[in-house]
Length: 228
Image (cartoon, rainbow, N blue to C red; front, side):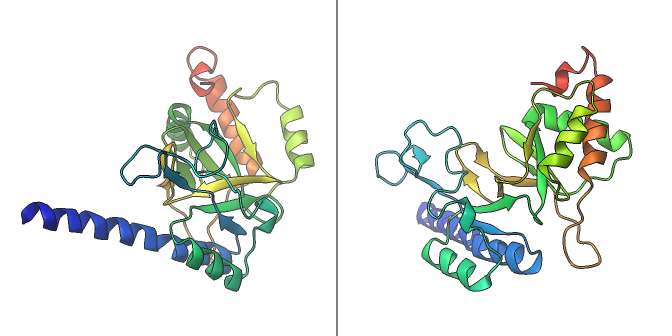
């Protein structure tokens, strides 16, 4: 009997975890005005519960399993409450995907180990960070919206930047917590801190990029620890 009750508790926990996703999507879209859409999610590899999982998209070699848009595609991202409710009524366990760029937040991401080390370095430098999304493979630092033109100017002005940095701007996306992906669960390493307007505070991309370059340049081995 104890085993059965324990199993039921685990099932209730999983259901309650999934039930968070529709609320997360609505908060992002309607309160924070972040355009979102449902991610593709994961599926059992052989169709049986408890089996190994893979991306629910048709690509058997998907490089970001469960962590990308599929149907609808990225251009469908919206802040419209009715559409968001409809999507998550149909798929309550769908990951919440943020469409970056435009008026929405952008992001800079690094491999997980480099990201963890970078945050320690930025904290020591006194840099105020915004939300940070962490998975087992990459950490993403959310920043205020930037254009590709501005990003290009900032990068052009640098002698070098960590080679593993990725930039999520116009036409990009980011899976938000608490999503379950092929890389494990996405979580907030730094939770959003709300500003006076009730939206998460976001740092300027130049501040974060400058600090990352400084941290990389001052790292042992010429910055290799931020270039994994």
